[in-house]
View (tube, rainbow, N blue to C red):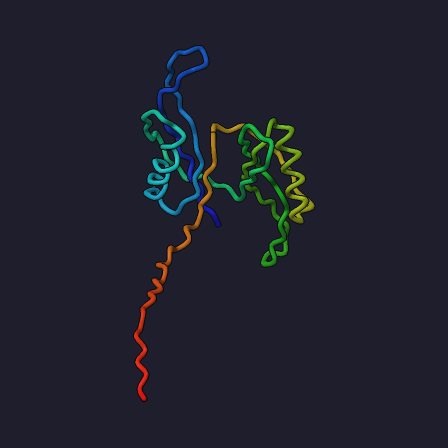
Length: 164
C-alpha cells in the first residue's frame, strides 16, 4: 500500500501580466520516509521549476487510491463511503476512504470516480464529498530496476598448436 505525502513548496513565479508573485503549490509524492520525500522533491521539481524554491511543509496524506485519468486539469479529493460486513461482530459498518482523481470539474470527478469504482467491482458506494485540492502534480513511487553489470565478453585469440 502506498504512503502518500503532500509537499507544499514556495517560490517566485512570473504571472501572465509580467508581475512576479510568491506562489505556494502542492505536490503529492509516494514514498517511504520524509527524507526520501525531500530528496525526490528536489530531484523531480528541479526540472519543472527553474527558480529557487523552498519546502514549506511535508505531511502524510491518507489516500486509499489515486486515479490518474486522461483529460483532466485539476486534482480532486473524494470521500467515498461504502458498507463493509464485519465477520467478528456480524454487523455492517460504514467505511470512509479518501481518494484522489484527476478531472476537469467536480461533476467530471464524480462521473469518472463512479465509473472507475464500478469497473473495479465495487457496486454499493456513496461519494458524499468532492473538493478541489492545491495539488499541482502527483509523483508515484517508481521502483528502480537494479542495474546489473554487463558481463564483458572477452574474445581471446588462442594459438592452436597441433601436435603430431
